[in-house]
Image 1 (cartoon, rainbow over the protein chains, first blue to last red):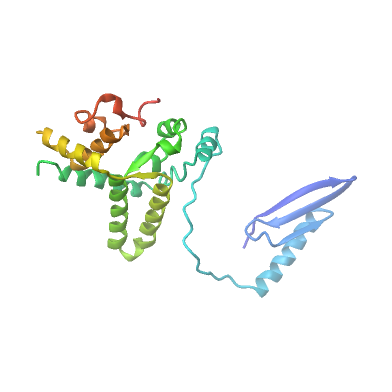
Image 2 (cartoon, rainbow over the protein chains, first blue to last red):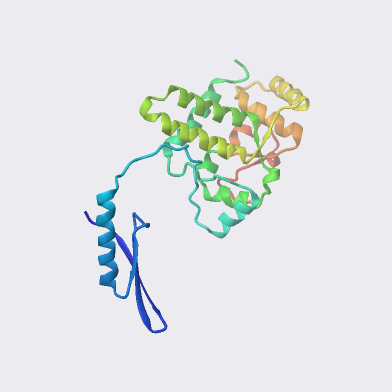
Length: 113
Length: 133
């Protein structure tokens, strides 16, 4: 299996250092004087982790829907004003069917009936 | 609320000029949405239960950001008056909302301007979805 590893290079006081971590398992990280050495250490830790761990799941509360905000000036202004959760169903067209149903129900209840 | 929850750009641009304290949701809009979400959740097949529950929770969260505008006696009196005047078929929910707007001096924000055109003066109806104010 292949794991994506992010590698950072830095130079401090003329000394080169490499830091690496597994993107999906950030707890596995390494630091070395070369990229190759850092990756070797990552491989060693991964092998150790795989040999001594298992993947399981836990149950938790349903999270409040988080709106993906774009950080625009408009977004910041609306947030400051207290507007929340706008666009919450932007990626869930089925959720908007409710409004069509509400319109149908309103059509069925008129004042002269 | 449809356009608020789908993040309509023009509506959001208009809202950015309106203090939240001056924007309210009529109780009937609140009730219709919550009834719809609860109905959908109560009728959902097992594979759809979590999705409908998430929509219900999301709708609660959206509505909780706004003040809810409830009926009072003047708005009920205005509703009775409007009902007696109308000869054409009018939707009861629209007439209730119009009565609340008239008695309370509110402006209705809607895309369905035609639904309210014969119930309210034009100055009390604004379409924030298609026009920038």
